[in-house]
Image (tube, rainbow, N blue to C red; front, side, top):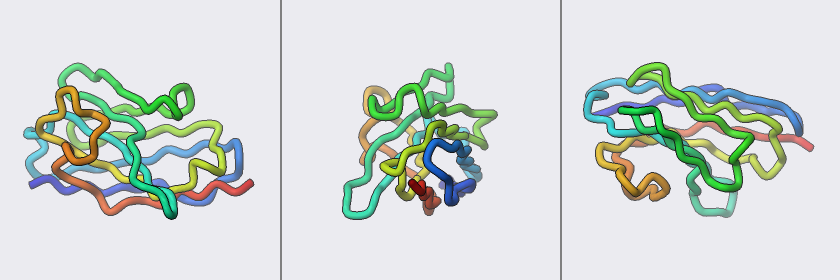
Length: 124
């Protein structure tokens, strides 16, 4: 089992920046990659970004390219840097980890472990 705990969410003004953190514990050696998803009120959960542990390759949703940056320090910490925040970025952001994600980075069903989420609210 892998446990994930997100932190760093909060209330930010339009145009501001935020860094979300995800701490992983447990059987982290089994992780192939980790990702971030978000869910806005009344909407489905959507893919934001992901990173492959072995080579650090990153993957982004088109809607966030250029503003979001995913990074990792080890198999225990992953970050999501968010710049130029917009009101439409308001959502609960979830960290997720998967054991077999090849070719499926964007599919939430392929991730095995999930955090509890952290709220990001952008005020206009």
